[in-house]
Length: 505
Image: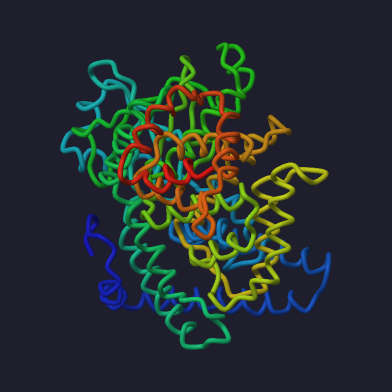
């Protein structure tokens, strides 16, 4: 498999055979790790209460340290597991989250050789200044600061040496193990583990191709060209290949640096609201989203713009998934808990035969708390935790793209909550989502909204009023902006149902 080839499961087996003895040695070591984990987890499960949690936490720490020793593929697996409570218990989810910033760098001389070989010229010729020490290291590569000959400050990302062959070998081994587990239903619990490995493989190969990452960054910039105060660095394509990417350096601050923000006259809470709106826009309007949002991938420049970087993990939502996300939003707004459970089935979280009646009280308790009708409101992480604790008793699986979305929401809220304790994600997200549905929705999303305004063929004006009421809590919402599009829709053939419904009131 070449360094630029897409992920191809049928090629992995050939890579395994080509590696010969090294492949079998790594396979047996990974089997030992797997057996040690399974036996240890089984022993842990014999405990109860606090002792169970203590043992699970200790086992999760051991697994995290083992992943670091195993290298890039398994560090990335740990990062993915931090979003997958359908696959591992919550103590493991929380421990794996620490792998975001625990990756050792590789030798800078090797990085310099890769850059020169990929770009076809020595570093001294390409750059006026090139810092010999990396700014940051990750599982796929690491980043250096440099200056071009024209004085432009840039960052240069370079892929880890020999990454693809190692990744291919690891994925080949993982597919063998997954296929064996899939043949034993008691172990697999109905989960298609080979398919899960393939999902991971496709994602990992996407992240390893910096040309693709650059295209994702440009797509994001195009989507936000009319959205004020959100941007991403410009890619220097003449200095970019599949293994090296060069982009503008961001002169700015971390969004969590309150002292720096205050010194620049920038309101932290406005930055937060901007980030939430940008997230909702990506999900409901664009159908394309940054899937790895954390403090290292966000900056605020000195004009108050929120800058997104590092698009190696990006996601694209199908029209169906976007519609179901809208369903979840509308059903939560209208407190339709039975429909919410069905949404999770439709999204692929739950098997159709799940006991829906058992989940209804959970859904009601969670959303009542989130919308402020209980004594306290719940964070997205608390909602995620409660749902996971309940669903772990059922065969369930979080689809990969939904897992990315959940991780983004939980990460954002976790960062914000430390600095703004009273912040609640949905208090900002719901009004902006309502604004999008009423003003900028795509045709299929608009029709989904219209469907929700009717019950058994009867128009429900109170639902429309509730949606407008939610939208009016969004500071950027202006009825004058909505009126023309509403009138055009009502006058169109597609607006006939709503028009007739309004006339029947």
